[in-house]
Length: 233
Image (cartoon, helix red, strand yellow):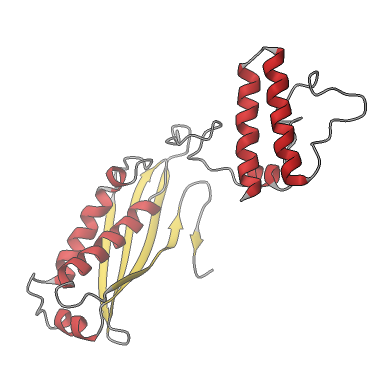
């Protein structure tokens, strides 16, 4: 936590130094940053023999970075974050157009009472599995409206299957989404199963308040630069 706080301070200091040319302001900013470093690590950042911090440009390469911070920043490049740390929608215009498929799953643990009512179609709101299936399909098509930085994808296929599992009184949900485009459909598949699970909950909540939606996960994806991936491999 301390390292993260110091990294944030370093980033703010760097931005300040690059936008303020007054030498006195530079000196004050550097002195303040040195105090912060000394309070955490016990010693001020090294500056080298005979060198002056006032004469050393504080850039991304020369600025003092606490151990572990620089490595983590380099290794964890998030495409939805720009160089200033702000959220952005990724520009996919240069990506290759390929067929992309994603399969996701989740479980809704109903409990014995609600499970029996669903399996016997006794839920007063109607056919739970059919309504949830339609809701899942609609959810996949609304993904870009629900998730701010998702692209508006033209889906070529959506499948949502719900299966009753009497061993643990649950509904197992599997969703598949496909497109031919420049970005993947993982979020569409996961949104499909999540919305289907929420619909099961909504239709059954009068029968039980103990229902759980769990194990929302990506199972398989295909296409794009990263190629094929499966959870069971």
